[in-house]
Amino acid sequence: MLRAVARILKNTHRHPANRALHLAGLPVYVAGLAKIMGFFIGLQTDLIEGVLLWTLAVSMFVSGHMIEGNVRSMTPVLLFRILARSAKSRSDRVKHRVHLFRS
Image (cartoon, rainbow, N blue to C red; front, side, top):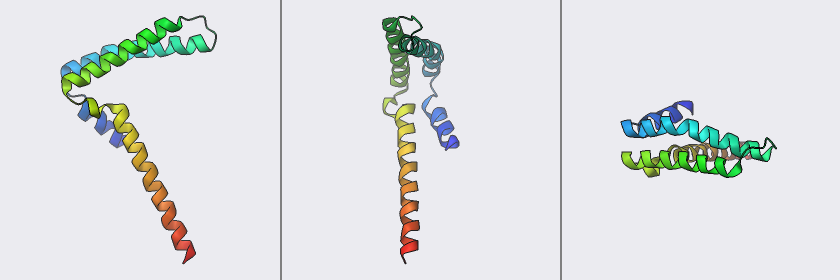
C-alpha cells in the first residue's frame, strides 16, 4: 500500500508550479490545523485565523492541481479509492474463507 501511495504522489505532482504551491502550502496547512486544534483544546489560539490559514492552504493545493490538470486525481481522493479497494478485497477474502469452512 505504501508503494501505491508513493506512486500516486509522484504521478499527481509533476508540474513545477504544483510542487511549488504544495511546498509553500504545507506549512500554512499545518499552522492552520495547529491553530484549529489549539482552540479546541484550550490553548487560546484564534479559531478564525486557523480556519483562514487552512482554507488558504487547501486553495493552494487545489490551484496546483488545476494547473496540472488533475483536480479529480488529488491525493485524498486517490487515497480514499485505495483504502476502499483494500477494504473490499479484505471483505472478499473473508467471504471466501467463510465459504471454505461451510463446505
